[in-house]
Amino acid sequence: MKKIIFLDRDGVINVDREYIHKIEDFEFEKNVIPGLKLLSQNGFEFIIITNQSGIARGYYTEDDFWKFNNHVASELKKNKIEILKTYFSPFHPEGIGKYKKNSRCRKPEPGMLEQAERDFLIDKSKSWVVGDKWADVKCGKIFGLKSILVKTGKAGEDKKHKTKVDYIADDLLDAAKFIIQK
Image 1 (cartoon, rainbow, N blue to C red):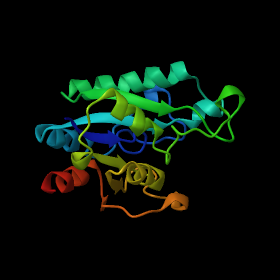
Image 2 (image 1 turned 120 degrees about the vertical axis):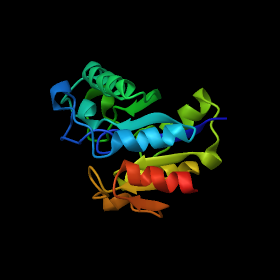
Image 3 (image 1 turned 90 degrees about the vertical axis):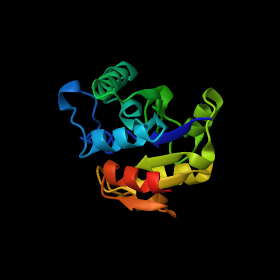
Image 4 (image 1 turned 90 degrees about the horizontal axis):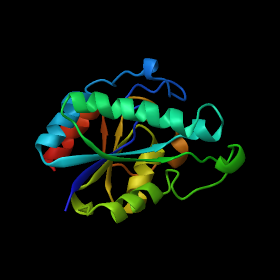
């Protein structure tokens, strides 16, 4: 069974520039590489779970999303960090066209985690969600996982979904140090 760290992308792995989708805007968040390396050295694997309302709002396309996401994965791979898979929600209740809808795969709903559980043999007792928004934390809690809020990116500005959290970390390295002690 796999020990998974479910990572929100924007604001956790990369700096969150509003509706980021251009490769030239990519920049790692502080301490991402050392944090992921520490987790990897302790037997954890990584899955990205990310809401992408910019697609729903018409700011960029699914193709733009995948180009940027593949760049993020490639930059991580240069640092010997592998992403098992990326799950994303292009939906938003205020979106346009086919993307305008409530969806179980949009965090805080746990649809992306449920799909990951169907795709991989996951040890939920040893897996975590790490995000910069309370919606990320709530998603993990709904699914029965331990969750960490990092003070990078949005740093928990979305109080609407505030819930019990296992730890509030300065960054991904701080989160990793906490996780490996548990």
